[in-house]
Length: 324
Image 1 (tube, rainbow, N blue to C red):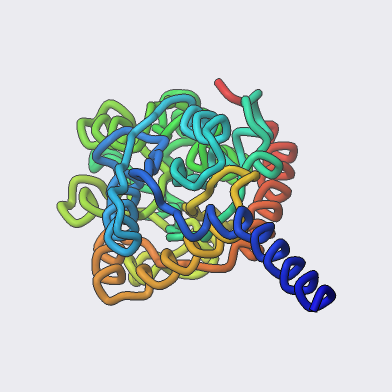
Image 2 (image 1 turned 135 degrees about the vertical axis):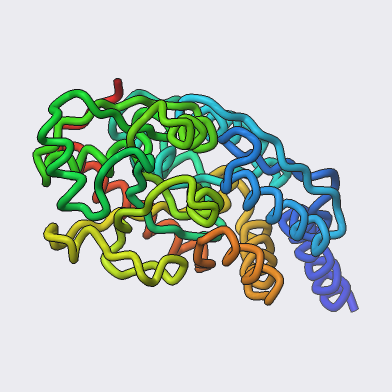
């Protein structure tokens, strides 16, 4: 009996030791979840982030609040997230610029690999070259010719120094030998507003950002920056097929937490995100923004971020681009 009792006691002790490891996932979420959107309200990123917050709150049975923390091309929002407790209650919608580009081109207060736990990609959107209707050009060839005839006189807007739109345009400038002046803005809405008003001549940003003004014919679409044509703009040629083969610039967004967050919470959040983004409602909402839904595993997302850091780091080196 003594031996039997000792075995029972050992089994109970082992079970008790296992409880703390399971508790975080079992009790999560224990309070409202904050999803940081590192850009101003009104932009496509904001709309996407609010949709994710709404649906995540519904599936988890806890309030999820979308909080805009713009500035420094989205790096402020990532810095806030990195410094928050790793309990799954502060997440961030990271993207190409603040995860893969900014750390390679300027000093940031976080490490894009060491400080974050990737949960899943959410959406992706190719970039598109658009011009103000006053620009007498309807193709990449005509834009290049017009810009070359006025070196340094035309300007272009971006969502911020070090953004994918900024670096993508710098790559296009190098490929085409255009001399156009960069005007950085704090987010896509501000830059697009000035483009529509004629304060800047052109912009190279995601289809998501420009979808509404394209539909309203407030800007002229020239070409998309992805290797393949965009389903949102099937009749618009790519820059690659317009004389610059291999040109490929897209933006992507994904949900991340802190690197010390438990694997159980990461796994649960991944499952919820993948499930909710597979619904017809999500496809309709995101499709209307001109973006594609892209989800994956935490491991796949982490590997993709690493590959994008390498890609953009090389692009920055080759182009000589810098933060203004």
